[in-house]
Image 1 (cartoon, rainbow, N blue to C red):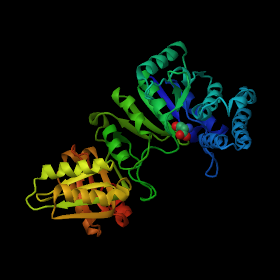
Image 2: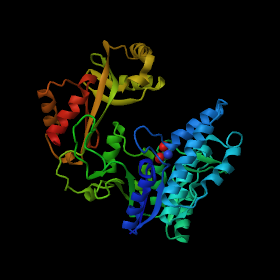
Image 3: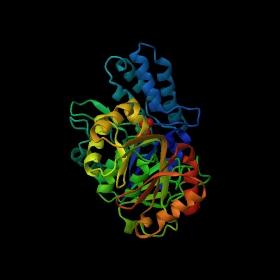
Length: 438
Ligand code: ASP
């Protein structure tokens, strides 16, 4: 058994968190690869090191002294080191870094130091071999991860050393320069490491006990999801549930590696297991649906024309929206009409031009614009085979006085999406939760 354990910023925020990480690592010898984020917030008034480092760079850009911020970053590392009795020469390393800060160091290298120093300290504390991401995570000239080269280097490192620790979030360009990923990128580094060594499980340790059925800001005490498929997770993530960096899914999904989201502060909780296939996910979950997620701020454009050639008109309308860079999220078709749903923000002020162009191209009897729409997706692998699910869902919403403006079902029947007025957004989620998961 081989596991990759990635620890997020809150899991390595300070010395107390380091101790929890050590206990987790020592509890299971299969956790031979550790990937670490930069130290995050210790409490709500604290700052993530990555944010401070970006702030530091902004100061340098505008010619304002960043001495104070650098001092704060340095003391975070010194505090951790001293509290845990480690030896790493934080001061010496910072002394070497400072003269390079303004002139020679690119923003990416500067920001990557959050992960670098946190990982240096954690590696010493855990007794793991530090393997710099600059030596094992590689980007191509196109700025995309060079997976082949990355996998080979990580595999090599694990062959050479029994237990390794890799900083997340950054890697090296073919030019030799350091490049960071997008925010939250350590999730990707962890996934790459898991895929590289064909791990049995990719553990993603964070500060929640897994993914919840619904947003806890909307539903009181929602149940956690024990097993979810990658496909279901993608539907939920697309609809606004933010759990993992979306690019972290592909490397592990491709290799059929299960991803387990765990809570560093409650290691006794099993968390959420994300698996590739439904068989593996099984039916043990008693709940009929897997999750509910939604997003506000959509516009519905309805085009009506008696006896229209729907496919021609639809194609023209889609081309027009594409021209204005407004992606279409959903389409509903009627005999003499169709409706397109797009994000209000993406349409922006172009909405009037879009309507004018549709009028010119399609010559409809009527074009209607309805803003202020929310989309709510109910996702569940069990829904695919059971008739009557949508009926029950619509009935529950109707009984609660929620007016459904549009309906869409994913082609694989994995999700049912309803469009409702923004003001009914939270109520819709609550009603669905109570009907199917409460
Ligand atoms: N430290 C980086 C961030 O805050 C990357 C990560 O934590 O995954 O975005």
